[in-house]
Image (cartoon, one colour):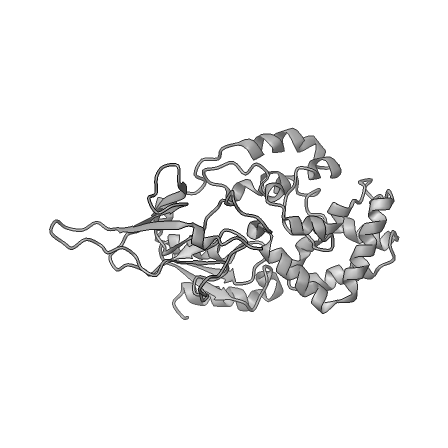
Length: 339
């Protein structure tokens, strides 16, 4: 059962403005509400959340920034505050922590890949049994990839990372249909691995999303019980410490990766400079992107002065590769004021 997450939380929110003496104070923002995927989604009375939601509120005219606090009680005592953020320039914020009392399935890192995995099985229903049979054989047999690495169950489940691409379901389906252990089967699985060719991708991937904190293997720490119970649920662009043992090309970087995972990162981006941006800019935000959460993209876009976002569900993460002319053309139209 999902915890009554929102009901257990209290939110303090103020809007700040630079105002001349004697001018009325900026009012507190209204309509503070939680959401999971889009800030405009309806909030039903008594709704529960299986993971930490994001929060949005009505924009306040004249406000230059907002201060947000999340606490376990209405008094907002020091020991009750879970998370706080100042300098928010957009009327929404994500909460980059998994709350300690959460039970059930913490989908903070897994909600999108879960949806894509289930959509894949809806498209190819027979593949779920095929995947289960493959995993059972991998548990019982020592199967080696062409490069010498053992193909383990958890490494096979990482094939789910392709499901965020426009042709991902089809590519995975073709592999699952191949004879188990055949040359084509093993070669194509190994070809899916982006980490051996690009080891820094694995080593610093989590860190690029971690301004002001240490990742401490976030994907591993938040691994949901549902994935432990159902091996046919695939994983996505998640990085795990076990990869440094099972991927031969990553093993030499194991020590460095552990140091980076424990490193308390400073602020990685100059927000003030982005807020003062003078260069015309546009960005595509893919509403159902499996790799980059839409709420984070919208918050970032709102931080960059003059940036015009294009939010669309017509494409997956590879929209520029899939239909580059149309996507790039739309972005250029936005930059040049034609759209």
